Length: 365
Image (tube, rainbow, N blue to C red; front, top):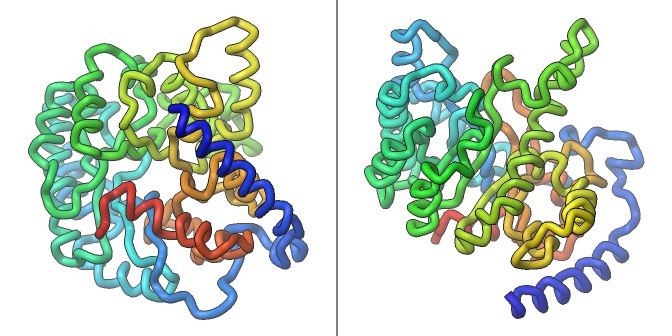
């Protein structure tokens, strides 16, 4: 950890100089172009690795319909060709496929959840085998039963294309399921296998984080989507903080964690959290700032200057591309590389964010 601290200091100094050089606002920002609409500067060869991309494979949708919860496949297995064409046109080399916030773990039994995870995970492996250089997948697990979860991780570990584990931040009535002793074997197995954890909050009214404060009611709430824009980000900040304060990061020092939506509000309130811990004299094994860099953060800040701040805070080696691309209902980032390019980073830092960090995380040769 001493060496880690020295590296962190050196990284901070280098980033400070780099950010000073690039302090001018980009043309996109000056023209008031929203970050998610920034266009590339030229042609976009497939280069980036998108770690925040959703799908609902055909067999999974069929089983949900049998359970009385019909949904829309995004995409159908037959549409993977179409999705690859979109990737080619928009500069994306590879997607890491996960379910969306509509994960069913809240309402299915653990046993049915285990059946659904097998359907999704087998489909993810097949997608990778069909397009080995375009798709990876995260292992979905039946989170309400840690024993079944470990069984599924063991079944899929080492299978083609399965390079991470996908988890909801919390469950109704089990907001702290991640930090309960019964779930510890799941985290231990992920660490042992070198499988990063990818998080995403659950959809649905029962999972609206923050209760009525994040939805308020009426047309204002509907138009602003508070449960998504505020609730998701608050929940991710809480998850990150609890990983630190519960000692979970100390217990699993090699566990890799990717926070969605650029870490939610966590990077921007981290100083306040640190101050609160110091006032309460809450003991931590390491300085709080070191824990901030234990996480990876995707690029989904939706604001160029906020992304610039994030890179400056955590370092270019802790940021990865994310689009929330669901290929159907909406595409949050049509040009995922463009916002990174607009930061005017040195080439080595830009390459880390676009693909280098993800290649290391997911062991892509």
